[in-house]
Amino acid sequence: MHRDSLLALLDSHTPFDDTEMQMLDRFRGFVASQPQCFERSLLAGHVTGSAWILDANSAQVLLLHHRKLNRWLQPGGHCDGDSDVLRVALREAREETGIERLAPVSSQIFDVDIHWIPQRGAVPGHYHYDARFLLRAAQGEVLRHNHESKGALWMPLDDAAKLGEASLRRMAIKAGSFSSCAVRYGPD
Image 1: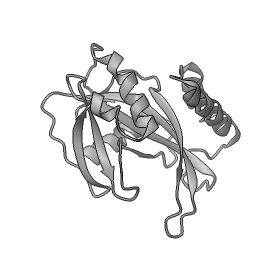
Image 2: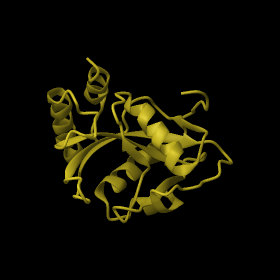
Image 3: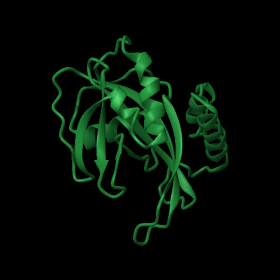
Image 4: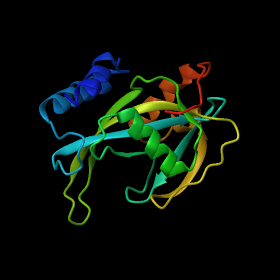
């Protein structure tokens, strides 16, 4: 089954707090019950992959000012049928930031979140079941944002922890413990 690898990743994820635990349980149930969970055509919601990108020194995180949602968020996007959610997170991160040399700190899920996306035009409101991965950018990479965002910046983790978004605070706090992890920048 194409959902087995994601279900295994969800089963091995240790949530940060009760809020993430509740989302993890709901996420598991959604993936287990929805064979089309990787397709954005599933109107109830769909799985997305995103990246919490640290700089080479693990002191800052890369955030994008999302054009449609008008909020600072991590890069990420729709799976569009791809059940390898880490691959989706890497693809979306590269497309949205212009950074090519990105490496996963771990192949395990870093964070899970479920959030509501309001209706836009003909697309009804729906949920994103977001699997997030911790990535690190290589030293010297140049940041460029694409048309999907109004801007991009490297923000100190302490400042990201003070933002209004609960999930950004949670990831900033979690990321503080990964500063010494070695990564390999190579083919996915």
